[in-house]
Length: 310
Image 1 (cartoon, rainbow, N blue to C red):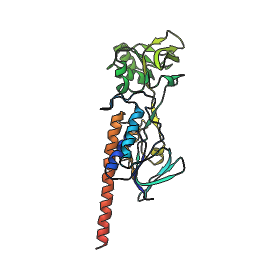
Image 2 (image 1 turned 120 degrees about the vertical axis):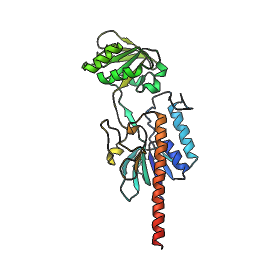
Image 3 (image 1 turned 60 degrees about the vertical axis):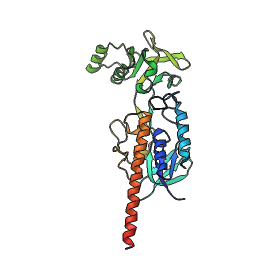
Image 4 (image 1 turned 90 degrees about the vertical axis):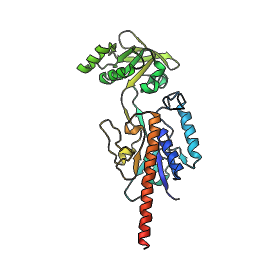
């Protein structure tokens, strides 16, 4: 079988958007995706123009439907390994054992948020426990909220949440160290501070009502936002030799090039603004870059053939 022009790993907004642009450039494209998107726990996705409030899985279904019209292939499988070497085709190995070969490889693999280690939190995540105020702050405007994390992280998150409500309690889950800057911010904005260890969350049908601590009174709140870090969903960027910044995000140029031969990246894995609509835009930008790089390669090959033929 002829190689694909582009193999895309990851079928979220970045990967699907890139596939759409490339397919409309008449490129042969395959998207490999295992079906575990970052926002799969959420009931609605926000901030995506014309699709605000859509079920995230429905957006992906619509995206797959659109790219299929242009002949893009879709493989519901995990990419277990990959290879990118100069002057050779890229190669990916699926968990099923199948090997795919192509001219370029695009990673749109995203990241995974580290959930707080609180028993039963999965019941609330995506319903009243969140990681992004931009995505879900509006739904909790003027409500009592908890900002969760280490002292510095939780305090910074509380400051961000002030755009939506001033009823914010900083919760550090047993971490008590307060540096001078955090103490100043907490005092200036009069944030209540709860450093006790959290025992559990309580509520109904995924709607948070209170936080129970090892000691002290329960905290009544209607939502909790957390800042406890994130990690790369896929090890492929590391395996292929990409560079990472101090926060563990993949380094790329403004067009999605990683510096590794024939390897590109788009979406949340690069640590830029992590909105679905931004990921889709990055996918489109990187797709245009890939298409141009392929064009340049093809034109150089045509020129060389003409030169050799006299």
